[in-house]
Length: 382
Image (cartoon, rainbow, N blue to C red; front, side, top):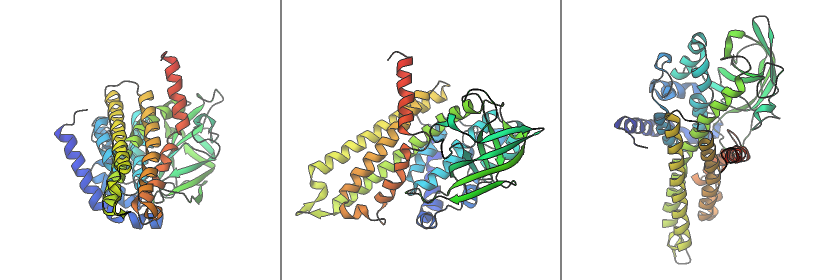
């Protein structure tokens, strides 16, 4: 992929913003278990980072996804992946379907303020019994005159304690599981919406994650995104950008872990010499960096195909799979080279180990990616 001066300018702006507005605060946000999303997202919105590939008429920059890739990759330099995940929900998980399929009125009410950072968004797909198996979603939105009445619950909702609205996937019909669901824009301050608990997680602790309940929640039918009962298809489309985005954010995060490990092992001495002087350490770190470069190439290729308007289901799934597997491999190996210090929370590699373990789960587990890829092989006779 060839980057223009405009791409590089965006990358430099994002890098400066991260170092000035995010990284100085991540330790405090991790300790508090929450990012001040409204304040941070307003700053991001003023910089144009929340609507890079969204339409100009909705307050976005109207750029293609290669520019969103640059921003996502740079977010890998945020020193707490929970912060990154919350931003990604706002840009590439809760809003793509609304931008593509939402009515003018709906986009004005929910999308434009989200791009400006004035509203915090969440994506409501996962449930206690329906994580990667999206077809198993049981939350129901039944018609009642000019309204939908929503009953059910959502689990593992990032931005869930602060969200102003949620892009909700719910059952709206009687047909097959892949053709009976719709996406709805649901304000979180409506009667019947409640947060049952803020979840205590292994990693990504700065990302506020909640369990949400909907008890007789009434929303106007005009809050439907696109057509009724086409929500599953729209969510699958939305997943492709989400999975590419997740993989892109992993690249520089892993490079940072490798750099930190090189720095530590160059200083740490054992048995009369630097740890880095052991060939097994040097070779392993070189091998891991080569793997990260392969991930970068895969992500760039997927984005190139996406920008060209081609189906990227297989490439996005492969990138997401590789990102999750590699995140586990790199952080585990590097933590080992830190020895006892690697097990200390004060050491950045331990946070990366905890945070990036989720990459193999969020946005579709590794096993789901493998199912998509294997079916693609059979379909194309590979």
